[in-house]
Length: 298
Ligand SMILES: Cc1cc2nc3c(=O)[nH]c(=O)nc-3n(C[C@H](O)[C@H](O)[C@H](O)COP(=O)(O)OP(=O)(O)OC[C@H]3O[C@@H](n4cnc5c(N)ncnc54)[C@H](O)[C@@H]3O)c2cc1C
Image (cartoon, rainbow, N blue to C red; front, side):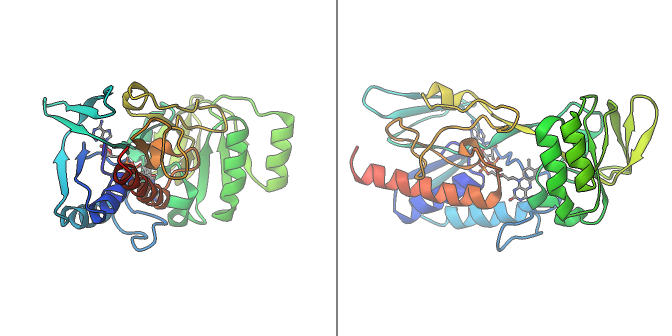
């Protein structure tokens, strides 16, 4: 298992219960660890993400056929005999008949001063994860183009005080019409930064010196692979575009990449809005797929 966040741990649990000798290697940086709470994962709703990871790791580690290593896999290769070899940053090596890629994704967001400090609290990328916590507040949406318009209109379920901030990009007449009908405001001025104490937000500052009071900001982010491992192993990747903001590994419903013995799960293989629930589900299916693969003796 390359990565043991929600998807890797879920795949690991499935393989452990199938009595497969399984090594999970994890660099310890699940993408939502910075978030103040976990929204929308049944059984863990609104609890700290660390509680989920501690419990899940303990559950997986309780099975005798599983090893969990802390570390960073920096190289992976498939040999002619269909085995895989991985190398960790500290020089450790391991071979495997099957690999599940579950390394999560690199969420990239606009380079706006003050955004990184508020990422996972006042600045969020997914209304289903964090919209409830900021309901009925004065909300900004930092995004341009059709994604921005769509994101702002969608956010009306959580608040009726929404402003789309295009950060210097021009809206079309049609887009302005949609926003007007939807009761959503907009501001096209370039954003200079976010204002507020600590991880809190009081206002968005514009480069002309003015500011707009908002207390939370939905930010469009684009998800990229965290390393070249998927590509190195021959997996196919989607190309991010304006609407599909994800460079995902192409897989079937059981996490098969099309390369024998290579599976992928979680954010890294999700071309739809990412979530913990989806990561757990896809990890389970990829784990089952990997177990079947080894049982069939491929
Ligand atoms: C700020 C933020 C808040 C979020 N909040 C929510 C929320 O409230 N509710 C919700 O449902 N979803 C939320 N999400 C989305 C959710 O966190 C992801 O969908 C989910 O974590 C994906 O799980 P994953 O296992 O695929 O990846 P991750 O959780 O990112 O785990 C991948 C693991 O693999 C490790 N790894 C990566 N590369 C390597 C390597 N080469 N070698 C070894 N290990 C490696 C990483 O360090 C990490 O530990 C949030 C996302 C972000 C960014």
